[in-house]
Length: 88
Image 1 (cartoon, rainbow, N blue to C red):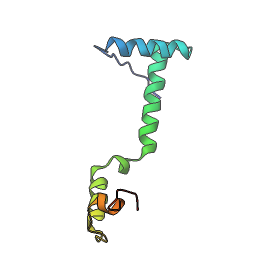
Image 2: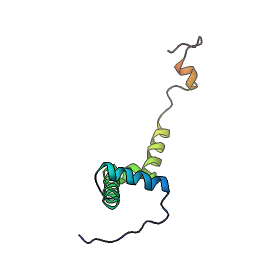
Image 3: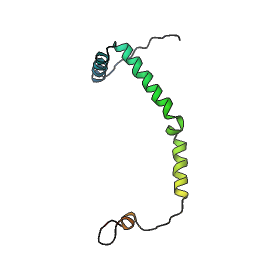
């Protein structure tokens, strides 16, 4: 694996303070803590799957949902509660 250098400019001071505290808590340098956090974020995104973040997938789900037949045309409140306001 080839290593490269990354310089982060204008990091918000509260984020830098949090990163320093995390590094101290985990007995790492700020550099190593940053690398660990980036690797963790990459892993989470990879395991989430691209289709979960894909707007076309969401649009497809919505389209399929809207294509379902309407079995009860009452408004939501009327379907959930009887005339006295009690749940049905």
